[in-house]
Image 1 (cartoon, rainbow, N blue to C red):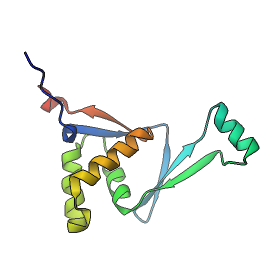
Image 2 (tube, rainbow, N blue to C red):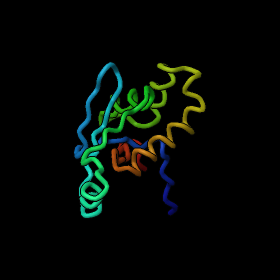
Image 3 (cartoon, one colour):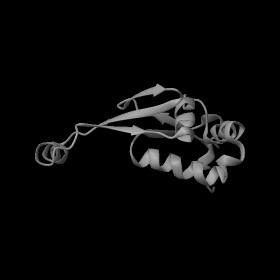
Image 4 (cartoon, rainbow, N blue to C red):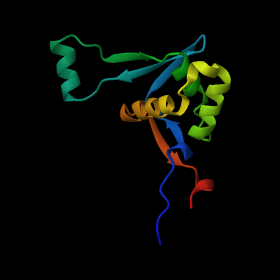
Length: 118
């Protein structure tokens, strides 16, 4: 029996609880604490900050605030389109790239919507 290939749009993004974040005027800032040996060296030798503050733009903040652990990427995309209209186009191409960037930086993880799992 062939296994059905997962559809990326069915995944549910989950914010990583190890990152603190704040919201002001609808814009989100995620605090990224640099840990580990290389970060410690960079902090001492190159005077790098221990914490970086990653400021999300209006689209990213809109999505971040709606990542509730229940809403899949398709629904987030619909909400984004309702809020920003044509400005959000090409919607799913941009959304997929953005989610991949958040995932690669470990800001989010994904879980598969069990209701759609076959």
